[in-house]
Length: 614
Image (cartoon, rainbow, N blue to C red; front, side, top):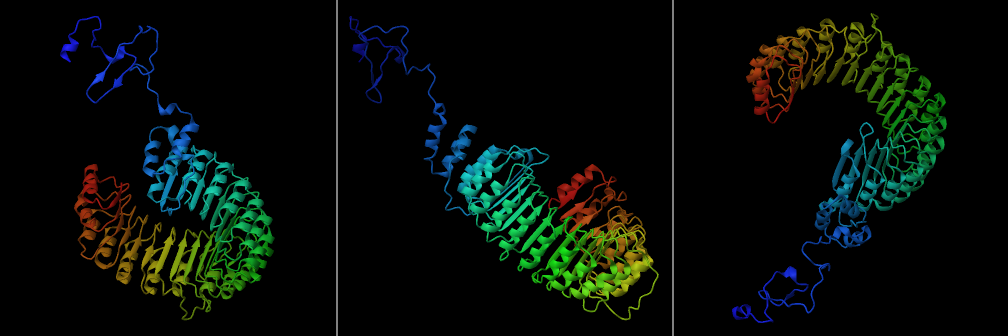
C-alpha cells in the first residue's frame, strides 16, 4: 500500500476526502476503496447525500402517515416515549382508539382551573393505560378559566374505555361532540356528573343513556339545554339507575321527571329535585312509584302546592323512605306534613328549611304520625314556638334522638310553666343555633326534659348565662361533646361545672368566642377532663398560665387544639406547646400575635407531624 500511494505515474491515486467523490463503497470495516470518475464532476451538481445537506426527518411526514405508524405501537412505554417528542405526536397518539380489556380503571385524575387543558387530557389518555387504566376523571373550571374542549374529551374516550366516573363542572367549551365519543367508547360508565356546561344538550344525554347501560348515578345542574327528552331517555335505557339529582334546569318539567321516576322505579333509591318547573303531578308520581326510594330531597319547587305533598304522603308507596329534606317549598303545611308522617312508615330523618307554614303546635301531631322519627332539623321555620318544641319532646310515642333548631326566630322566651311531671325525653343530641329568642326560660324547660343528652350544641345564644346553663348541665348524665361557641355571657363558673360534672366523658369542648372564659377554665379542664381530645378556646381570655397548666396534666392527650386570636399566648408557651404537640395532629395559632416568628419556626420544625395553622 505505501508503494502504491507513492507512485507518481499518470494513473496515480490521490488521497482525498470522501466529499470529493460521488460514490463511496464500503468494502470492509477497515478498508475503503475509492475510484476516480471517468468524467469531471460538474460544479453545480447537487449530491443527494452530502454532509452539509439537511437530514430528512420523520416529522416531515403528514399526519396520515404518522397515524399509521403510531397505530402499530402496542407497548404503553413506547407510546409514552413518542408522546414526549412533541405536542403534535401527543395529540396524534391520543386520537387512536385503544383497547383496555386488561385494565380495571383503578386510577383517579382531577384537573382544575388553568391546569385543565386538552394537552393534559391527551397525556392522561396516553400514559395511564400501562398503569391500571383511568377509573375516575374530574374536570372543574374556576371562574370560567378552562381550556378543555371536545378534543380533550375525545382523547379520554379513545384511550380510557375503563372510565367509570366522569365529572364536568363549569366548562363552557365542551359540547355534545365530546360526550358522544364518551358514550361510544366508555360503556362501563357508572357515574356522570355535569354542572354549568351550557353547550351540552339532550343529544349528549340520550347518547349517554343508550351507550352506558351501567349508569347508576346521574347529577345534572344548571345545564339550560337539557330537557325532558334527555330524562326520558335515561328512564328508558338506564335500568340500574340508583341516584338522580336535577338542579336548576329550566327545560326539565313534569313529563321528564315523571317518566324517569316511573321507568326507574325498581332501582331508584335516591332522588333530589331542586329549582325545577314541576307541579303536583311529579310529586304524585313519586308517591305512587317511589317504592324503593329511601332518600328524597325537594328544594325550591315553587309550583308545587299543599295538594302535591299531601298526595305524595297518602299514596303509601314511600314505605322505605328513611331521609326527607324539604327546603323553600311553600306547599308544605301542617296538613301535608301530617300526611307524610302517616304515609312514610320508615321515616327516621327529616329536615325542613324555610318552610314558613309549619307551626309549632302541629309538630306533636307529626311526631305521633311518624313513629319511627329519630332526627328532626328545623331551619328558618319561623312559626315554630316553644310550646310546639315541648309538645314534640313530650310525645310518649316518639323515638326522637336528635333535635336541631337553626335561626327559628319565632321561638320566644317564656315564663310559662308546663306540667312535665317526671317525664324524660329520649333525646341524645340537642343543637340550638342562632335562635336569638331562645332565652333562659325556654332553655330551662328543654333542659328538664333532656337528662340523656350526650351532644349539646348551643351556638350564638347571647342570652345564655351561667344561671341557666349550670342547671342544664346538672340534669344531664354524661355529656360527650359540648359546643358553646358565641355564647358571650358565659363565665368560668359554667366551665367549672362542666368539668366537675362531665370530666370523665367529655371528648370535645368548643368555647370559641366566649370572651369571659379565662385561665381558670383551662386549669379546671386540665384537672378534670380525662378523655378530652379536641379543645377550642379561640378568642378567649386565656394566657400562658392556663396553657402551662394544660400541658402539665398527665392524662391530657389532645389531638386538636385551637388558640386562634388568643393574644395572651406568648413565646413563653413554646415549651408547653411542644409538650402538647407530642399527641397533636392539628394546632391553630392564627391571630396569636404575641408569639414571635422564631418561636413559630421552632414549632413547625419540632412538631413536624402536626398540621399548624398560623
